[in-house]
Image (cartoon, rainbow, N blue to C red; front, side, top):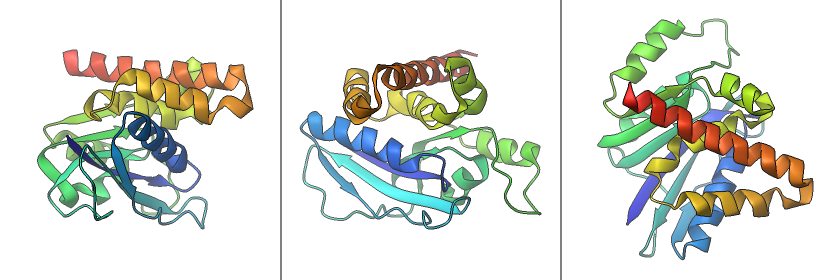
Length: 195
């Protein structure tokens, strides 16, 4: 088992939280984890990306070669497209459809969505709206993680346990909010694939 993931988005959107949840779930599942440094966090609103590799065998490099990534998991649609050259032919692109417009010449949303849909395995969801319905727009990153959960090679219960551990110090309400967001994302992705 090996899953190579590129996490992408914009500073402040919760990329580190996604990486922590996946990493803890993998370790608790007795898997090896290697993560490249997260780049771009020094500026809120700047591009952020990180490589995350999970395997049942030791992982020696934290960098994912071009054309071999199993998943691009993104909380921002334009940022998801930035890493398409890394995606394997049968890889998945899972992204939020709501843009974080921080530049004057941000591309037209229709163009972005058309490009995303050209990728055979894609999940494009309005994670911000789903998160708001789950209780807070702040958990849109966990909604995207939920949408990607079926393709990670990890048990869903391991992700739930990881969320409980990571957010324990913030209290039961925050844990419940994040678990609801995870489930809502999983259900949104499943509904999209059935259409």
